[in-house]
Amino acid sequence: MATIWKGTLSIGLVTVPVELKRAIRNEERIHFHMLHDADKAPIRYERICTADGAVVPWDDIVKGYEYRKGDYVVLTDDDFKSAALSASSTIALREFVPADSIDPRYFETPYFLIPGKGGEMAYAVMREAISETGTIGLGTLVLHQREHVAGLKAVGNALVLELMRFADELVDESDYKFPSKHEVRAPELKMARQLIDGLQAAFHPEQYKDQYHANLMKVIRAKTKGTHAALKEPVHAKRDAKVVDLMERLQQSLAAGKHGKTATHRARGGATRRRTRTRAARSA
Picture 1 (cartoon, rainbow, N blue to C red):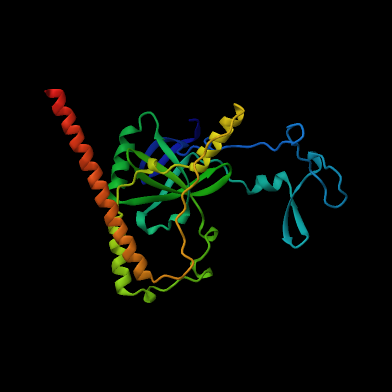
Picture 2 (picture 1 turned 45 degrees about the vertical axis):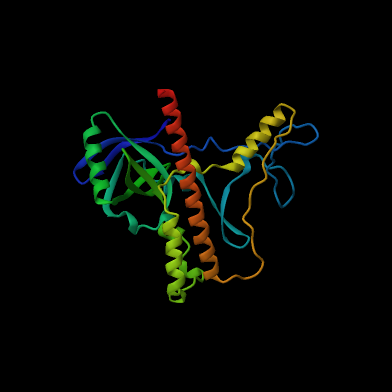
């Protein structure tokens, strides 16, 4: 993938030449074009003036900020240039904080930091130090003339830099009403913890698939061949219209979880026995 930014990672007096590259794939998303149904020609969007209904040429369009309902202040190219920040070639980390002390809502877009030539050793040392201390380095980075808060964390063999949101971009918890922990009763909490303990597993992200994306691609491929895609109906959990006691639901969930685990163990045991018999037959 293309390099988005190239410069230096600065941690105290330690400097590491690095390159910033994408860590997520956006091209996997399906993109559609708006077409005229009659002849399937692409639709062209016009810039219409709301005052007289006339089409406005690009040269006559300016950018305005609505500071009061119906009142705008116009910003020129020079205004934007004066506000823009000069490009920086350094990511300077100011501090390290415990990784679990940052609200996940702050994190926005992840990037891989790739070590530049000659910086591999310093890169590896700092990565291991960040990993062992369980911290995230915080600093700033200028990208596309805007300053971003940047968080640096160790993920496997890589250093991952995440652009972060500013504090005023987050909705405060007090804007909504949430139940207090004092409303939680000990018996329900105990069973809920048992339910969670029974469902704990290692994280395997590949098991979660974007079924909507897959279905759309099946439909698209079928249409290009002039056929219809055979899609399975999604399985939805049944919802009971009546209000059911929480304790009853927890008990049912625990029972279902135990039954599922027993069935899984039986299936695995049967598969193991079949493999054993197969190997024994081959040896004979």
